[in-house]
Amino acid sequence: MKQLKILIVDDHPFMVDGIRTFLESHKSKYQFIVDVATDGEMAVNKENAYKFDVIIMDMRLPKLDGIQATQAILRNHPKTKILAFSHYDEYANISAIMKAGARGYVVKNIDPPNFIEAIEKILKGEIY
Image (cartoon, rainbow, N blue to C red):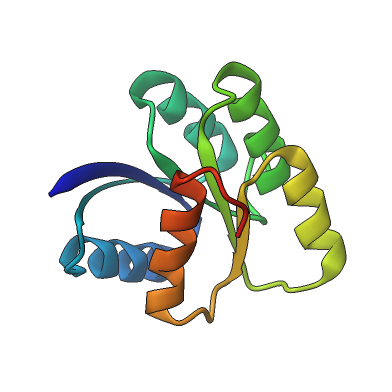
């Protein structure tokens, strides 16, 4: 079983706990090792220190929003895979974070199997 280091970047503890519990208990070909950042600045600092396989990035965050954090992370670590994760499904939001370098975008009401599919696709270098 391959280990994947995942960083969840979201400022809502209930959302973070749900994603973390799902990933850590999900039976797949991966063992998810999960860490959390509660704002964009913390996400940048954690990526600089630990180098995650996938970062699950909320759009609206304190200090640096998801777009700013994505740009800052990819400036120093261009191979980092970022999956944008938001309540908002408007084209402007999707377009902005994808232009910033995210490899995928999912809405927070996504079905769990599709969430895993999104992670797997961006790991392969595909867009989701």
